[in-house]
Image (tube, helix red, strand yellow):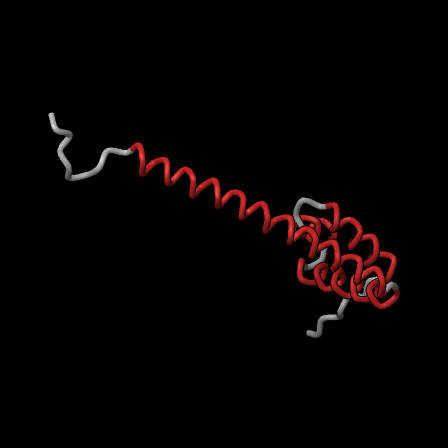
Length: 104
């Protein structure tokens, strides 16, 4: 018994990929469409590569935006880390020392 591979037309793939960008769950969408999740991920990657080839400047814009976001997040992490350090210092100052008598 040989199985025949189902061939999906480009329009179906494009609609599926478009829906996948809005879907809460890729596996659930794939099940609804009657395909394997891996196939849907492959279509997404292939279409993204095609778009990158057609619009090479768009890829540069995405990279620039991602770098800017990365820089913002690093600043945010540094700020939060500084706050954590301040809290730790406060805890050291106001916590009773272990093993020392209070003089009472």
